[in-house]
Image (cartoon, rainbow, N blue to C red):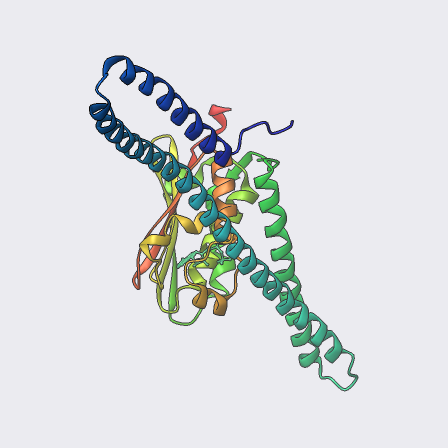
Length: 312
Ligand code: ADP
């Protein structure tokens, strides 16, 4: 549809001319019919002129201010999204190039004939890890685009929380840094029960939060688990890591946003993980948020409806 909206500068000019025209026309007529003394009339005309300048000035100032505010806000938003986009592209190319270089380099090394069995296995292991890393990046981009286009689907089924959490625990404890302790806290009564939820997506959220916790915690502890809160389950992932600045605590759930560019550059990440978690949790009928003290650690929480077979 054609945009028929009159541009702001035309509106401004038109209103200036119309108000000015009417003012001259009617106020002059009214004055002339009321005042006959020419000297007195000139004085009044001068005051009238000043009044017009003052009133129209104030009116146009308010009008300009309102419109300039909108324009400046839009400009700021565009600049911000432009810088986020270029930071994202930079991160993405880093995130793709690093594992790609690993794969290409180690495949080249594998071609050598005089390699021991151990060396060959180690190289294949690195290639395997790099391929998974690459797959992770591609999956994140696809997931985010599904979320943003509203095409994400939740496939609910019976899930034994106990098994799922144990599985998550075992996979993360293997890759934990020295000096970091991982603990799992379960609400045993519910953990034994079968929950109706999307197992793959629930695991994806926990994996994402735990990977972040590991990335930003070099010593201390990481604790995860859940508890029951009325009709919801409250999941948590708490760490004693670097923490997040209060200004960033809400923004980290936006795509491409990263709290500390320098730190995350060292540890990798394109700023998509939490946006994906938020998209999935929201779609599953829950909420996600974070609390943090800079330098002391971060607690991530998310809720999911507590549905069992009897609710179906
Ligand atoms: P990334 O791939 O960059 O980790 P995420 O969306 O998962 O993207 O996280 C966004 C940002 O939130 C991270 O870059 C980091 O700055 C901050 N963040 C996330 N989790 C933590 C945490 N546990 N401790 C400190 N900062 C975190």
